[in-house]
Length: 129
Image (spheres, helix red, strand yellow):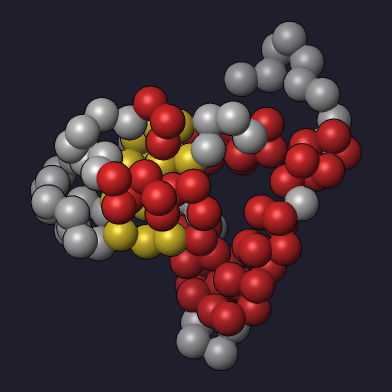
């Protein structure tokens, strides 16, 4: 848990050194029409909310610091973000108890291969956000 911050955007703490992560955050920002998130590379996050324990968690997976005080990690964080930015059915499906372990496995698979995935993604054009 972190200190609850009612009526404030939830924090997404992501790896600012990862090109794949950066592209995903661009997508989130584009779809976050209601300003539900504040996306910050974990390497640049202030203290608070950053702590040494949270920093170590961020090194292993994306973290969401929800405004109710919950810390959501990895695949569950991705599902939560999708649900909040306009894909509620997909987010709920990925969070569904029988599917959640597969969501986490998929997250770990992608996270472990993000360098390769970054090279496979088409390059941004100058008009992209």
